[in-house]
Amino acid sequence: MNKKYLFAFPLALSLTISAAYPHEKNAPSAWGAAPIPAIGYMPETSLLAGAAAVLYRNPDKDADTHKPDTYTLLGFYTLKNQYQAGVISATHFRGGVLLRTEVSGSCFPSEYYGIGPDTPKSVKETFTSVYFPAKESILFKATDSFSAGIALDQQYQKLTKTERGGVLAGSSVTGSKAMMNSGAGFAAEYDTRDSEMNPHRGSFIEAKMLWFGKYAGGDASFSKGTLDMRTFIPFGESTICLQFGGAAVSGDIPFYYYPSLGGSQSLRGFYYGRHIDRNLVFSQAEYRFNVWKRIGMTLFAGAGEVAPGFSCFGGHIRGAGGLGLRLMLDETQKINLRLDLSYNGRETYTYLNILEAF
Image 1 (cartoon, rainbow, N blue to C red):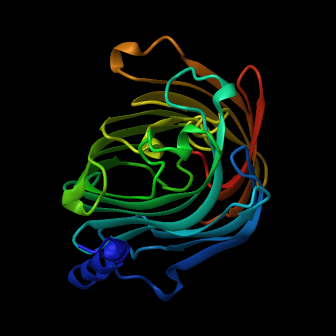
Image 2: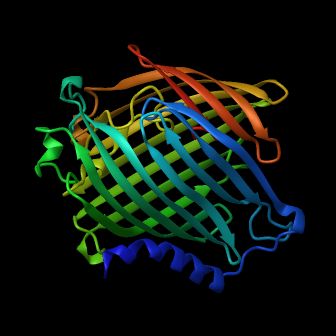
């Protein structure tokens, strides 16, 4: 298979599913949108600006699901000369079929600190890469709350700029040269949340196992498994949110596929990519409450660790916590603009994003 055509596969598959499984019926007024200027800040990007929109379509009362179709569109440019454009969607079809798709393109200067739970900052290397991922899950409903199916993952990444004399300038690190990674596997979801964008009650569990290799048009052979468990507990009008996650990889892994501790979602308070290794576990808790009209606040804390093997966990646990401010942009779907401040014991990190961390 010609690798340049791999990214057309998710679109072709979406059209095939649309033909085989028609959309749920929707009333003419079922569509809604929350378009906003994309103004944000993360340690990985600095200040960013662009445009974003969350589109949603509510199902009819007699549909197979009470959950809306969602389409998140985003395009931005940052002060670090990074840019990204993409779409993340969740579409429900008749017969209990759920299609999740994520397609994007980006050019990002970033940082590499080596592989391991406690690499020193002195080994930091900066690099720039172009990155085109296309991910898709096709899930079939087994019960009202459980679905399972197949997962696909294609990604092309090329480092366009590296530091002279650095390890990424050579060929010793897998992923330092242009690579196409392509894989397939299994996915399963358990979902009882009352809302995907801002849950107040219910639970969500997602498990994936993917195998990458030449059989799917890829350049490297490796596997990756992920687990994401969340629960949301009503406390009056407020919500107690808990999450546990983990990931493991094996084989000849490109460095950017290693599980990473930190970022704007999994553990706020650490630079995404600062600590990477073959195994990851993390957990976090958050208390969300309303202050006045469309304004809310959160208190959150979390901890996690990366390690080369499961027997190595326990030696480099890292924690962070903080508070956040919320501004509700869309009352129908409870879509928030969030500003989070997180302190890890040494540094404070600021995050400005659309939608909740989890």
